[in-house]
Amino acid sequence: MYIQRFDPWNSKLCTCPEKYSLNPYTGCGHRCLYCYATAFIKNFYSPRPKKDFLKKIKKELQKIPEGSLISLSNSSDPYQPLERVYFHTKEFLKLLVKKNYKVLIITKSDLVMRDLEVLKELRCVVSITITTKKYFKALEPGAPSYERRLSAIKTLAKSGILVTARIDPVIPFLNDEEVLEILEEVSPWIKHITTSTYKAKRDSFARLEKVFPERAKLWRELYFKKGEKIEGSWYLPENLRRELLHPLFEKAKELGISIAACREGIKEFEAKGKCDGSFLLDELKE
Ligand code: SF4
Image (cartoon, rainbow, N blue to C red; front, side, top):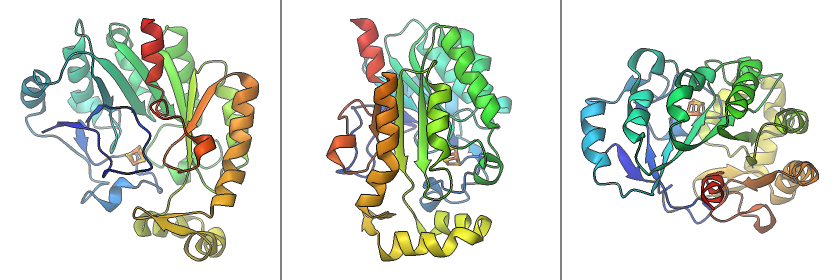
């Protein structure tokens, strides 16, 4: 099945609302160093389109109850470079026009603007991941620049599309200072922020320390000596995670924007059922 119930390994830490998940592609060309999906999916950085995509999703969609939330994508980017060639995401979105589904799009690409006219026909929220101004070339080498993502946020918002930002992941001693500036910069255009600290997997950590060797020793100490392993990932010590996220929560409060953390397991940063920003679609209805 290409459209599946979103169930991140039955994680106790997940506060997402009930939703379905669809990845139009296997793997991702954005090649983010911190990507966790590389630990589960073979040849992740050699992305490929899903076979017989349109035929299969047309069939599968008939079984998804109207009113459901469908999220694209949770383990690849629906607007990664392959989408310019295969149009899988666009084809799927077109199937939803005039149907009563809620749609959550999570992307790092301004290619989403190509589909603006389709998006206007849907009950949808677009979440743009925007993590760093300084390091995106090194950290997310296949993804569009900070400026292009910011421009996408503005264009979508000005066109009446609900937009949220994923300021995620926050990596200690890398982007932890600039994330506040990013939050301020996107704040006039967005309705919600999802954030979280970087959780290390062995392979993503190896990529990070290769590209940022000067930070490797410190990160090793923080993650593997002082940190803890939770549900298969290495977490920073809780006090450091609080320190990293607290300023973002304070700033969002000051600006009147809702904010929630993803899989931190820290009560004060949780918003059960509201973490991914899709709740905005329900408020729209009321
Ligand atoms: S855009 Fe998302 S799925 Fe693609 S490489 Fe980056 S983190 Fe992984």
